[in-house]
Image 1 (cartoon, helix red, strand yellow):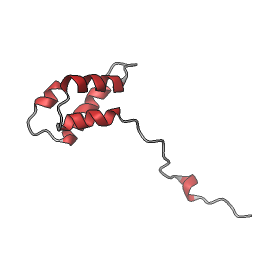
Image 2 (cartoon, one colour; image 1 turned 135 degrees about the horizontal axis):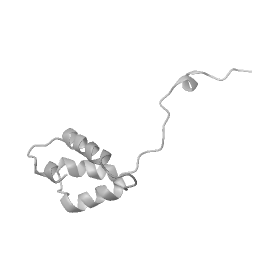
Image 3 (cartoon, helix red, strand yellow; image 1 turned 180 degrees about the horizontal axis):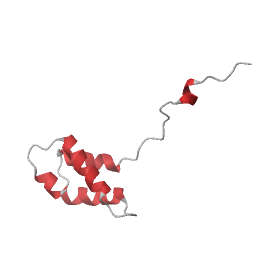
Image 4 (cartoon, one colour; image 1 turned 90 degrees about the vertical axis):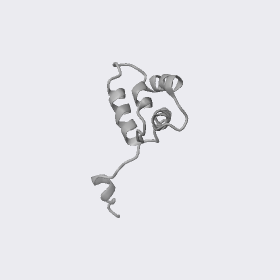
Length: 79
C-alpha cells in the first residue's frame, strides 16, 4: 500500500486492483475494515485515489439485492 501512494499518476482503477490483491492476502480471521482503517491512518493522503478506495472499503455494503433469475420471471398463477 505504501508503494501505491508513491506511484505518480496512479488511477483509481489501479488502486482498486492493488487493494483487491492486498485484501486477498490478509490472514484468515483478519478484520479487513480494521486493517483498511489502519492503512488510512498511516498513509491516507486527501485527494489520492487509494484514499478513496480505502474509504469505500469502510462503507458497509447495501443490503443484498436479487439480480433476477427464474423466480423473478415467473408470475404467480391467478386464481
